[in-house]
Structure formats: C-alpha cells, structure tokens
Length: 535
Image (cartoon, rainbow, N blue to C red; front, side, top):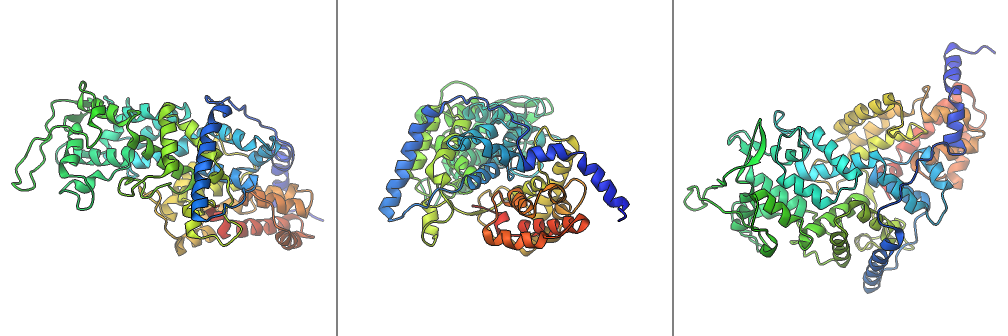
C-alpha cells in the first residue's frame, strides 16, 4: 500500500511528540508545578466555610428545599477552571487532578489556579470592566492594556484588595508609569480637558460600594434616600483632580456643577453619602475618599466586593443587581458573613476565593432530586446553570484543541495564536461589555459561529497538532479515543449510550478516515448545549 506524502508528513511530525502526548494526555502526568502553601491554612478557613454552609442550610430548611447532591469532582474541576482562568481544563490538567488524593484535590486545584498567571490575567480583565469599562478610552491619556497588566500583577501577588482600590482612587503620576491612574484618565473629558468628576463619582459608587448613586445625579432619587447632594458630594472628591502630560495630580478643588434651578455654577464641597465618621480629616480629597472607601468598617465596600467575587466564581451574584445592593435590600446572611470575614482578614482576595469554592453551595450538582426550579437556584440549593461568557467559549475552544495546558510554559506561537484568535472570536461572537451578569440568551449568529466559524473549525480540523488528530492516532482503542475526546471537550467521560454510539462510529477506521471521524466527534461535542454552559 502506498503512503501519500501528506499522510507521511503527518506521521513524522506527530510521532515526534508521541512520548510527550502519551505522558500528558493518555497516561501518567509529566509536568507537576509545585503547589505553593497558601497564606491562610485550611484549618483557619474551615470555620467560615462551616458557618456559610449552616446559613444556607437554614435558608433551605425554611424554604422547604432539599439541596442537590454533590457534583462529581470533574464537574467541580470544570467550574473552577472556567471561573478562575476562563477556560476548561486541559487533558494534562485533568490527569494531574485525578492523580491527587480525593479528599484534597479540589483544595489543591484552587491553590494551584491562584498561583497560575492565567488566573490573574482573567480576573484582572473581569475586574477591569467594572473599573474602566471595555472601551479603549482616550488614546493619548489611557492605556487599558497596561492597566490590566498592572492589575494582573497585583492579583497574582495577592496584594490586599483594599490597597489596590486605594491606588485606583488616589494614585498620582503618569498613566504609563503609574498604571492605577488609568482609572482616572479613562474619564478624560475633551470639552473640559480634565477627568470627569461625575463619571468618577458614579464609577466609585457602583464598582466599590455597590450603589447606583448616579441615579441622583440630576435630581433626588424618587424611590431611595439618595439626594442630588449625595452624588455631587462624592463627585466633588475628584473636583481637584487634574491630568495633563505631566501626569495625574490634585490641585485646588474647583467642582462647580450647575444648580438645577438657577442653572448657575455652584461650588460643592466633598462629602461622603454615609458613614461620615470614617472619613479622615487630613489629606488630599482623593486620598481621604480612598481611605473612607476601603476602611474595614465600611461594610458597603466589603459586601460589594464579596458579591462581585461570588458572581465571578459562580456566574451569579448573591444579590442582584450587583451594583445596587442597597436598592435590593441586601440583607443576605451569607453576604454579611463573607463581608465580615473579608474585612477581618485584610481584604485577601485569594482567601475569599478559597472560601467560596470550599462551600457546599459551590460544590452542589446543577440538578437536584426533583425538577430544578428558578427558586431553587436563587436559594443556591442547586448550582445555577449559566451561559459561558464569550471569552470563556473562545478560550475553551483553544484549550480543547490542545492536549497540554496552554499556560505560560506553552510555546509562544500557541500563546500568540490564542491571543489573536480569542480577540477575533469575541469580536464576532459579541462582547457582553460592562454589564457583566446580564442573563441573556444565545443568538443564531453565535451558534453559527461555533458550527462554521474559522476559529472553531481550525481548532478541530484534522491537522498536524490538533487534539482530535493526535487522539485519533495515539489512542490504543476506540473506547479510549471516545473517553479522551469527552474529557478534552466536556471534562467528563461518556455515558454508556454515548460510548456505544461513538465507538461504533470509530470502529474499523484508520488513517485519514479515522482522523476525520474524530474531528466529527469533536465538532458534535463543541456544538452541544453542554459545552456552552457552566453547570
């Protein structure tokens, strides 16, 4: 039998990586990055986890809900990876996870992810949307990429969140040398040629305090206690802020908005809308505001942060809307427990994430013993199903195409291709924008993009380096090929019915035919509803 030049080239290139693939994907693990001991030991975290679990169980009992069973470990692994690094786990990471002791593998995986640069990058982008939005802003005065990189470094080193926010509000200097000042410069107004106090006041209230104070920007709020003076008083802390090519700094306060009755400028002095006793008497306006916002006794700051992190990790906030907690009457016992613990432990983001992921609510299955209802999801008696974000879909498409983790150790060509490909996919798929947790349904163009789009097609076609082709070549049996494909795409094994069907499709196939059938299997799994949802 003659071997075609294309098949011969394919065999030569792929067989060169047989040892690595067999070890990382189909057999034992090769790379085992060290797990750095966390700052807070497990024994210190367990009491707050126990208290949260007890609070949820009390709520379930009062509502007559029976909580669902615990989700399988691989389902929890998928949740963790999607929540923290924005992508499904690789085959390599699944094998490493399965090699860990059952009783500690979830805890160890969380610690490992918190030390992974991909987690810091993903979380930085999620937080940045609340801080500076998604637009590029004024080019000469704003560097979004530099801002996100700085934020990623701060999250990776587990810098206290209060310290990060303090810099966002109060830092001085040039936006390139002092990236935190991009929080200020993104609001630069061409008409006044200064940062906008109104936009900064609104962003501060929503992002850091969970309050839509800007609803009182033009007049007193008709349904809540906020007055126009409350909003203007907060905005006035930024009235002295100036920004030019020498950098951002505070000068003399000159915040003079127009009086709503006389339409004449009126000078407004800085004033916080609540907890005035926490506001320092000395310092620049922004430094005083920053100290007030992040004060450990300012419960609005802790609750807003906890609610946002819970939403990032699970896909839904404990209390909605995420930027208007007071309007939602956010007397949520779990929110208060987490907020108090967060403030008591120095605004430690890593610790907060470890606590949330250790709770029973996070580890429940997404379906219970009876029909799952919206009320059960709202009570967290089952894990709520949420549609994957555009970047999660894109990053997962790239990850499923490789048997190895696409982390900082991956070849730079893979990382470059992922960066450009993800950006292109998200642009076509449709970015969610700043409204992070808007529960919207999928669209027909999105489904078509997954079915026929260039990025999705290139990730599964039977090329030289795709996971589908490598599995088709190296899997020792049809059964092993199907199992490996399911793990690569859905992070679970096939059901008996699925195994019978797809193993039958692979039976007797070889060479190009087998690679094409494996490609078809990957295509079917990627286009399943299961792939596009977190559950």
